[in-house]
Length: 388
Image (tube, rainbow, N blue to C red):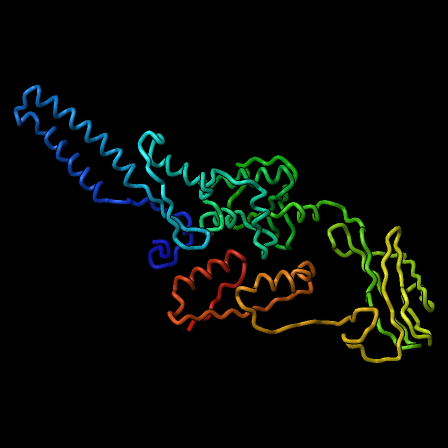
């Protein structure tokens, strides 16, 4: 039931939960007794019972009904649901009775709330903390569905409460609610404003973006940093090197700049950033200034034509491209990302081509293949999987 929905894989696995009996035999016996007393009560007129017998019948019927209620509470004391490890998890409700809550359903929901499995609503901060890394925009339909498809998310008791979450996120500047035009722009664009939850559309065509991304589309660009490129150069005596300046705004987006003031402690550099190396070997500094901002680069003038990473030079080498190919143990993947890739993740130059191969002596089940396809779709990735 968790894995399949008809002939296809079940997508919303987290939405399906079970309340199961601990010892159904007790419930069966209690039901038989109650049904027997109800039959006697229905046929009491034909049985020609006297007043004393009718009185005892009424007492026994009410007692059996009360006992049956308590038996149901005591028997259905286990809840089974999908845990965060994607395996079935059993929750023991303990010794419960009818006075624990107005109904057994309310009692179970209260317990699931207490354990964090169910939420009436979630905060905008939860969405930003659990934002899919592959998404720049997150469709409102995918946001809602994630709470019923991914065991990492709590179950929403009221699916439409996600509208209120988005509304609050737009009001406090944590989220923006947007549509997308064919040319890739955002319209409509709601950010840092009061937006009614009734105006939030749950669909594949409307999206949320995080506040930092939204600011890029409303704040005027302001030059906050400049970089001199290349930052490190090995140059032969008498040769020229042209430097350029890249301007970056408050969101690390590139900006056009002009009126660059160049300076160097070595040979001359002209107003176009062309440095001419002299005959004296050594390390020199080139600086560029734009308004109150400055950046610098280092030049090593040397007759050596090749630069090796093992050379004891005071600068780092500059290469056009760096690549690596190898196998990573599954348990070291997160460490690999943190220690090797994370420093490059903020730039546009990082490209990952990943080959995943999963094999088992027992084989890979169809359900696991379908689960993987669903996860790939949630990340906005190609869900084509080769099997053999």
